[in-house]
Image (cartoon, rainbow, N blue to C red; front, side, top):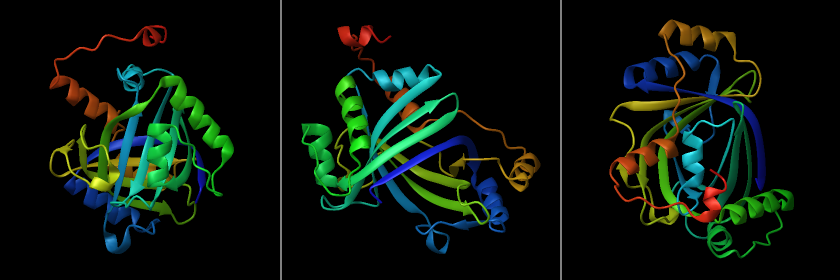
Length: 250
């Protein structure tokens, strides 16, 4: 699919193995696994997040503004350079998430994002590509961090826009920022932890809110990139002065 557009709310919950297993058993009556979660298994998602030289986008995001945005390059599994990849802009305004993305070969994505060579594939949406052009050029973005995870995903039987995903084995690194190198790096979560994300376009089903109440689960504020960045800062004592251009945005 060359382009996908999402507008939705997202809520996140941190689970242990026991709670994760309880939820999966409960929701199986109302939801179906997506095409990639075959036989109850997980599939791998890998991303490269782009930011400014002095990490303006993630620093702004961590300040919890009304509006925030990010750009990432995403693939499923460990890709070859000829495989398809997604370039995504994700924006959040007053709790509503808007994601716009377009697909191209991984090699084309590297050439485009890192060298400024625009792809010319037939499946590209030019409007979205123009948005990505403006975004990456205005901020002078560069690859900053690799983040991968194993996912299990479900969608509602009655409303397939209602989705629940479970992520574990979240790995990060700041070197070898190539998706074809595969998933390896520092673990972001403790063993046995799962991040559950609830993606809602309309109303949350009553059976699901009832389950959350019964299990005494409450939303948490959690960002994979934000958590990685804070861990990176705790292990990095180097300070980079803001560029003159960055000072105008702060």
